[in-house]
Image (cartoon, rainbow, N blue to C red; front, top):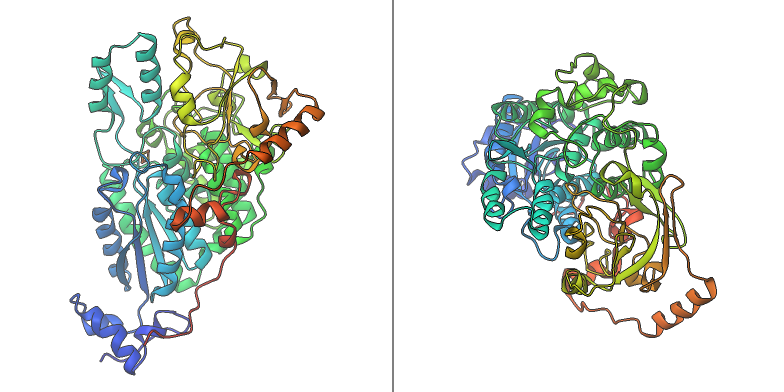
Length: 578
Ligand code: FES
C-alpha cells in the first residue's frame, strides 16, 4: 500500500488512512472500480452528490456535468466520488415534489455523514433538489459547493420567446376564455422546453440557483449560465478545483451561511422578483444552522429594494437574457449599497470583489435603480386574524388595483372541490369575490402543493376578468402570477382560522398595511372552531414517509422542515461498520 500521507483533520483518513482490517475493507472494495492504490495516499475525497434522473428532466444532463466537476477535482489532487441522491422532478411527482424535499435532505445528510468524504459538490437544479441538498449538507457542515443545472434556452413559439410555466398558465387561461385554440396550445408545448436545464423564467429553480451566488456557495454565474452553454461545463470544472481548495482551508458551509449572507440573499431575492417558494427553503436552511432568520425578515429587508430584473413572471425577459445582461454579479452592482460586501464566497473572493469585476450589458433586462420594473418587490408578509403566523403576497406578480380589496368569500374545501365547481355556470361569483382554497397546506395535502394560482372562473374570464384576490394555505409555482395570498399559516388542516371561513364571509386585504382579516365576529368564530373540532377529520396516513411527514412537518412560516431535522449534527461518526 502507498505510504499514508493523510492530512490531519481529514475525515476520509479515518477510513482510507488505516493500516488495519478496517482500512483494508474501506480501500479494497473501492479498488474494484479501478482506482489505483496511490489515490488512497491521504488526498482529500470529494463527494459529488448527483440528483441526475431521467424522471427529472431539469437534472437529466447532470451526469455530464459531474464528469466536468471530476476533472477539476482530479486536477487539484483530490479523489472525486460521485453518489446519487433522490431526484425530485417538479413536473412528475405526485402529490407534489415538495412532500419529498425533507426526505431528500435526510438522504443527503446521512449519505454525506456516513461516507468517507471531506467535501461535497451538490449537483441539482429542479426546484426541490437544490433545496433538499442544501438542507442535508448544512446539517453535516462540511465544505460544500453548489453547481446548478442551469436554465433551459429560451422557449420559442411562432417566432416569439415563451417562458416555462408562466406561459403555460397564460395560455391555459387563454384556451379557457376562447382566446387561443387547443391546437395552438398543443403546438406551443413543443417549443417551450427545447434544451436541457431548468425552467428559464425566474421560477423557484432560477431563484435558488441565483441565491447560491448571493449566499457565497457557488462560483459567479452559476445561477444564470444556460445548461446548454459550454461555459457551464467550465464552471463545473472550476468548481471541482474550488472544492478541493475549500477542504484544504477547512471552510465548511456554515462559514458562508451567516446572518449577513442571508440578508444579502433576501435583498437579492427582492430585486430578482424571486419565487415565493424560496422563502420557505431559506427559512428551513437557516433553521438547520441556527442562523436567526424569520419570515418577517423577508418583508423588512426587501422593503425599499426595487424590482430590477425584468424577467417573467414579474416582467418580460427570460434567463438567457439575464445571463447575457451580466447575471447576478451585474445585478449586485446595482444593489451594492444594500449588500454586505465583506461576506466570503467559495471563490476565495469577497462579494464586493466579485461586484468590482462585474459589468451590466443590458439595462432593459437588469434595470438601473432609477428605472425599476416595479417599485414593489420582494414579498409582503401579511398578518391578521386569518393568518396569525403570517401569509405572503408577491406584489410584483399581483395587480396593484387589488392591493386594497374587500369581498365575499367563495370557499373551496379541497382542490377536488375547486376543480369540480370553478367552471360551473351557476357558480355564485363575481369579480369582487375572494376565492378561498383550503386543505392544501403542509399536512393537509400533504406537502403544500403549487395549486395556489387557482384558475379564474370561466364565466368571469369570458367577461374579460384577468385577476382576482385568491387566498390559500398552498404554495404556487415560482413561475406563476396573480393577486394570490399564499402560505396562510397555520394551515386549515390543523385548525388555522382559514378552516373557519365560510361562503359569504367578508374578507379584507390591505397589502400596503400588511393586513388580512376575516370580518366575522369573534363569538361566531369561537362557535365555528368548536364545530370544527367536533368534526375534525382523522389523520389519513397510517404508515411510511407520509405518516412521518404529517406527524412532524412544521408550518410554512418555519420553512416546512420536519421538527426533528431542525439544527445540525455535524459530521463525526465514531463507530466502524465491521
Ligand atoms: Fe424543474 Fe421547473 S420543472 S425547474
